[in-house]
Length: 222
Image 1 (tube, helix red, strand yellow):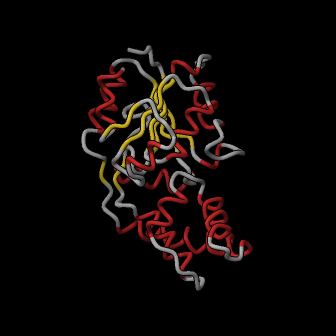
Image 2 (cartoon, rainbow, N blue to C red):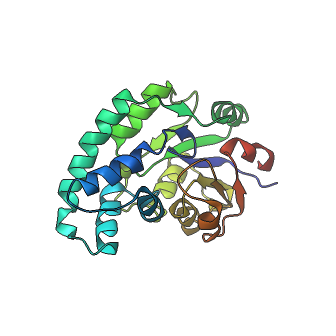
């Protein structure tokens, strides 16, 4: 049992079930520009990344024109906003209970995401998750200069709650990049979950401490 004081949890696919709408929308947005990428390719290449960076690196991989990235990102952002307005967003099974239990044990819970602040808030509003009730802080791609797998978001979370030792931090996510972010920050525990973008085989490549079905299973580890 580790003495975990801070949990840094990814959003889509880890705490929130939004039916992969982000990656479906990203696939459509890229293909609107005359490319032909599959959802599987997008999931394995882009999961967990800040989205403009994800589009740029995807275009590089498929030998596309990287100059298209800003326009595709714009297109993606517009489409996503629309998709989210219609979408029914749910917590991943057991997550809400898990968050409330962690808060009751005086653990700090930070949600972190490769999304913009606007999109993250849109999701939280739909779930009616409130700061200081379900979580203590939200850190998005807008809050940092370097996106995942840079540990900057985790460092910011630690600073907010005056936690000096990364060994007291748990990082959980549904993509390899989440686990790399946790390892780069020196987190005491990295947890991969199977409720989101990537499969066990893919997640094993990042060598997380644990691979769980959902984040609520982490309760027994803390």
